[in-house]
Image (cartoon, rainbow, N blue to C red; front, side, top):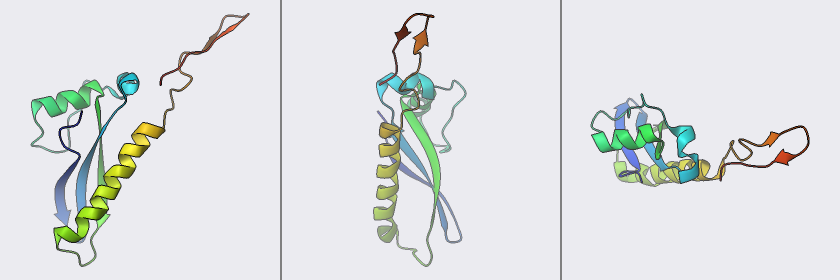
Length: 114
């Protein structure tokens, strides 16, 4: 499980860059696994990076426009909505639903990843 969910990375002018961490359903973690993965956040711990490498956590760097909004309190609800949307996408989109389904010339073996 992701230790954190939203990490503010940097601000350039009216743009804020954030890292979003989402928990990946267990059955899909092998498809997200990448032994070279490291977080965009330089202060990620060894455990954070291990979770990213194992596929337990997915990271997305997103950008949000802040026209005139310098007060972080004004932006927090937007950031939470972005994270909720990202987590929902990780939960809902499953391109591996039929992964491994095979046909032996006679019958189909239906498999897939939950």
